Image 1 (cartoon, rainbow, N blue to C red):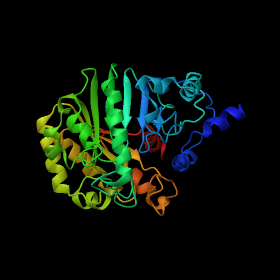
Image 2 (cartoon, rainbow, N blue to C red):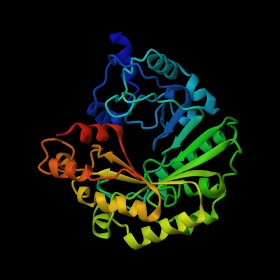
Image 3 (tube, rainbow, N blue to C red):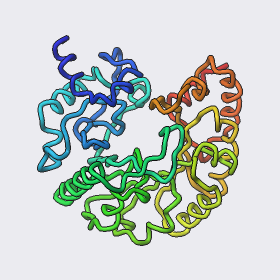
Image 4 (spheres, rainbow, N blue to C red):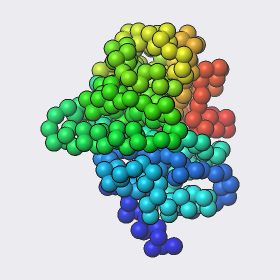
Length: 343
């Protein structure tokens, strides 16, 4: 067993070692819930590495680089993928962040394939929770390498004749990125595929009408992190509240699919949570609140980690959370349990 674990850990990319060490890893005890992500899920990161979870930080074992696969089906069939699948089938979850991924609360089952494309970090914002500096890759060798990956993914998806949800993007803005934009503008979607878009929402009105996949988009997840102008422009650096609201209203008027606003709870925005719920009610859309994670972007993460019980504002935050009506707001399971059990 020791040799097996060491050999699998070698497949953790160096840039994910930090996330790997953040969470308890090891054979789970008394876990009876099931997960089939290792058979149905693929996340492709900024280097083209492939992971069999919706979040690579939760299961940071790379099963190979996307450029090495001639068919998407092969991603789930190599040796590393088979070993991971066996581990999940046996409900060991040896490399999973079971404290945060949701498996402790319920089964994690994908009926259709779920392909998450996260190949470019470029964004028109520089949110401190996500990055320590601006990132906009639009020329040079690095850009050329990403375009190569982008074109290869487009080819693989075009030849993937299975029901699938294609997600873009978990690490940059797909409408701002020059790497994603060709995919969004020119892809002719397979009738078996639907798209889930993760964005900051500031370019929806400008770019979305020009895309070829608009009619195949089934869901919009929009990162907002605030319910008022002052807080928004503090935590979403480079963003303008008025532009965001204008785009959200436009989207609401021009689509009838699910729209969800995301809120990463932190010290800088916890006092805006009730205003955020009011915004959801005003727009008649849903919201999702999650704990802030340490991606190594803060010089002092503990200062922002409002849900640490030792944080000076922890009780104030919980008191605000207890005022939420939950009509339009969904909390991350771990966060919901924390609030429920706090006294």
